[in-house]
Image 1 (tube, helix red, strand yellow):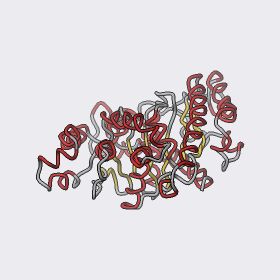
Image 2 (image 1 turned 180 degrees about the vertical axis):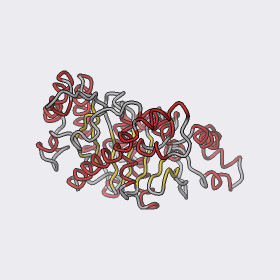
Image 3 (image 1 turned 45 degrees about the horizontal axis):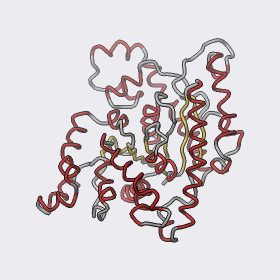
Length: 368
């Protein structure tokens, strides 16, 4: 099993749309995938699960999170936690024992099943509480404090535990665009990540920021790793996160004949600058298993490079991947003309995302 993340320091690049459709494509290709929503905005959760179901999940766990696990268990029957764990719970709920410093749950709740091969652990707006705990305990990690190490590595541990329970091939973690301590612990402890980038100045600076942050993070994690015992090292991945590459995403198509990547000249100039920014700002140790020539190419080429008109909006509305929209049994009247008129283009998105997924898998295999 590999634990991956889709990350950019620049928001608004379609990261959640890409994460959702990548996971859907992998599951359609026979891979078993768990999505984990670690973005406090919960966009991936909203994309995947009806609002009524999200509300039910949150409401059922509200009291436990408000008062704390120990007090909840004191004031409730012994079966209360068992009952909660019969249904899916949010990521915040799963992290609550680490927040409080109590023992972990004896049994993990099931994830939300979106399809046979695709599951999700929903996010929750209150996940910022975990970030606060990471910040307060970070310095303790340097002296090998068990709770501090557990706090830094718990999201990876959860991914691994769910992987063993459900035989996932991939866990894909969605994050916010922040370079704060919460994402530091996530990005630094996944196996690999890639960057969706818009062809503009802001994405170039976003990649530069990622590179400089990763350099600092790697230095911090190397120090911690050297200072802690061999048993505690087992909680960390064998090596620091590896960079898988980038893709231009949600760019406007330019139909002029022979235009490189079918991008307008202004967009193309930014897109062609990305490999140099990667080379200069993302350390060689983070991309040591993938050649510079391959890193310079967007993952999957033009497969998902260009925008899909209103298709992603419709996908979020119906909570299915774009290519499944035409086959839905009930389509709202306002959407029927759009869907019927562009059926071929909508169905073609499946091949595009599968092509992208196949190219990504080739890179994942290279990082071991």
